[in-house]
Length: 257
Image (cartoon, one colour):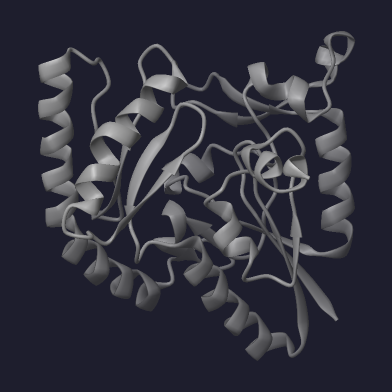
């Protein structure tokens, strides 16, 4: 029976240098870190630890790993890990076929849904801009687009003070969504506050690929692996779930026991 792992990337299979200690790297082991992802200028963005590389090798020996990420196509291309099957990018907005071609019917459906959600995202962007100007807050909303399609808004704190993003979420974003029961959800983890249409969901893309895999291979086993609260939605669509230690999702599940 074939096995498939749908795996988030950032803070799951690799992470920035400052976070490596939470993933099995110690002060006397930093020389064992290896680059795994890069910024647009070619400098290293994220690393794998020795333990992560050993675990990934174990996974790839017995199953096919399918990236399931918020990264866009350019961001995925700047990841140096080897993937050979499907890929889910843009939080599930885009599905890539084995070989890298776009699943066009999936994109067409998502593009329709995203354009329907765009006026709300634009209104929230204006609302956030006005708040930031009025309060002097340095962060600004940015629309994330790929394949000529707007997908979601993201705000990062310029000083990487995560508590200020928490305040922005509770005092500005959540009241806006609640006012009129708007069809959006929030993902906040570290220095990243994202507001997404409910139609944009990794779980939907995972279910879509799983159905195709079952049509091709018959009975299969699926695994989901991720670090954040939002990843739990696609992990729940799989037969088994894997959660790295020291992550937001670990703290909400096994860490809460």
